[in-house]
Amino acid sequence: MCARSVSRSSVIAPTSPADVPRAYVALGSNLEPERHLKDAARELRRSFSPVRFSGCYQNPAQGSAAAAGAADYVNAVVTFETDLDIGELQGRLRDIEAACGRRRDAGLCALDLDLLWYGDVVGMTAAGPLPRPELLQRSYQLGPLAELAPQLRAPLGGATLAALWEGLRAQQPLLRRLPCDLNEAAGAL
Image (cartoon, rainbow, N blue to C red):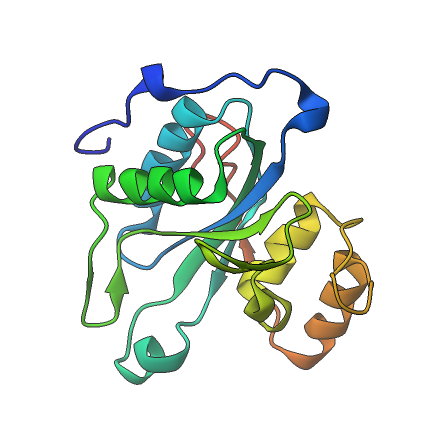
């Protein structure tokens, strides 16, 4: 369980589903991933109900974490509708990370929540560029995102996420799907 929960009273109910953007957020952990991802799933459910999670995927650490000999990561993507603006959503995600014990040291990451996509927003935002341009080259983000939203189209070029994922799968090692379901309150990794 997270050290402190994000307040339920701050959950904002949408007024009209047509006016509410859909957000897609990547979850990742390589430090006790079972505990941290379950805790994050509970907190995300409390803050943004209803939510839907992709499957969980194991992949090797990359970049500086790989150079430091870091453990494999477990990643997933969650989607939900929210009427929080991008800055408020980014703040809420940081609150959830903190409540769930986010820390990074020596290639270990307890929990990372990254906003990948927010409605039809394209361009520089308070959360950085959206949709996240690197997600199209990162199998651990694109695969789970394409699982949840295969019909979404990349802003430049217009290919669907399903098509982009098929192309990337041919170039990179496949992710290993784990037998977990974060859509269940007690999903096991």
